[in-house]
Length: 221
Image 1 (cartoon, rainbow, N blue to C red):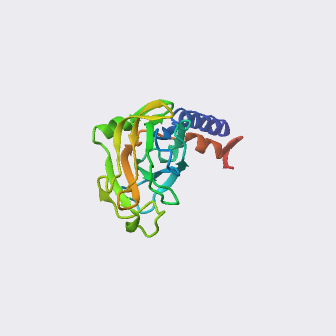
Image 2 (image 1 turned 180 degrees about the vertical axis):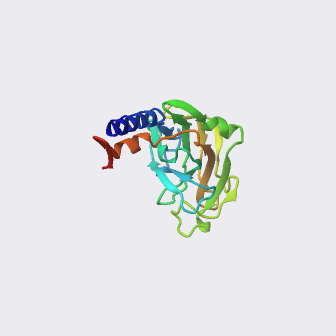
Image 3 (image 1 turned 90 degrees about the horizontal axis):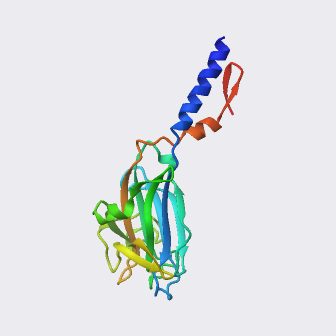
């Protein structure tokens, strides 16, 4: 009887945990705005900080894009940070070569999705001033391609973090125009959001996958 109760209780636990599982994603489109044909590509980097201005953020996305069109929708998995309060740090960067001309980077329809439903409209939050915008100049980094360094408030040296419709390949999307610094200095334009994921539990599937049930016992795979 005890063995049967053990198996039933475990099955119930896994079922409940699975119901609570959440798919948490950052989704957006990346593009170069029409007219930026002289660019060698602008780079977009996404990092997760577990505290603001974390010196050791986790990089979850990086793409240097040199086409005057939108990428397919990009999907970044944030599920490992469920049940946490995080900062989503994004960089508009000139890329590895640090060529700064015509890097008209646009990030279209940025949003946080939970189980395919919009949890946060990041563009709206940006328009409402609920973001932190800073600049990291190459001269303020240990290495020019670092993603951390001394941050200066606001956009600097020609960088931008404007919200509005942008056209890439003739297709308009509501966007953040995140041009890196270029006018006299080279650097990254940073847009950062504080994201509260404490209400979401993404670990159910992971927990279930690591457990196996035998008659009257529980073992880890």
